Image (cartoon, rainbow, N blue to C red):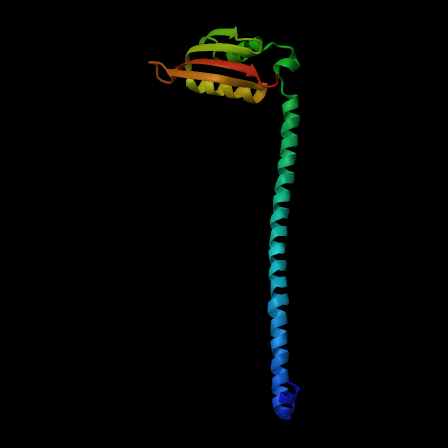
Amino acid sequence: MKAWWETLSLRERGAVAGGALLTLVLLVYLLFWEPFQTQRHRLQRTVAELRAELAWMRQAAQEVRRLDGARARVADPAADGRSLLTLVDQTARAAGLGSALRRVAPQGVDQLSVQLDAVEFERLIAWLGELERDHFIAIVTLSVDRTSAAGRVNARLIVRSARS
C-alpha cells in the first residue's frame, strides 16, 4: 500500500486523501450522527405524548377526587338512617310513581323486589337514574313490558344498595 502511495503524484495523493476524508465523514454521519438525531427526535415526540397523557391523567384524577367527594356528601340509605325499603318507596312517590307502585318487598337480606304497573316510561327511567346516581342503589334485574296505553309500561325490578 505504501509503495502504491509513493507512485502517486502530489495531486493524486491530495485527491485520494480528500476522498478518504470525505468517505470517513460520510460514514461518521451515516453510522452515528443521523441515527442519533433520528432517535432524539423520536424520543422528543414520545416525551411530548407522555406529557399530554400525564396532563390528562392529572385532570382525570382531579375529577375522580371531585366526584368521590360529591358521592360522600350525597345521602345514601346508611348515611341518613332510612332503610332501603323506605328510601325506594319515598323516592318513587316523590318521582310521581306512587299510583303505579304496586309492591315493594324485601328480597333476601339486602335486596328489594319492586313492581310498578302502567307507569310512564320516561318517569320510570328518570327515577331509576336518580336511584343509581343520588342514592347509590344498584338495579340488579329489570324487566319492562309494554302496555296497551301509549308510553306506559309494567316494570319488575330488584334493587340493592351499591354501598353494601
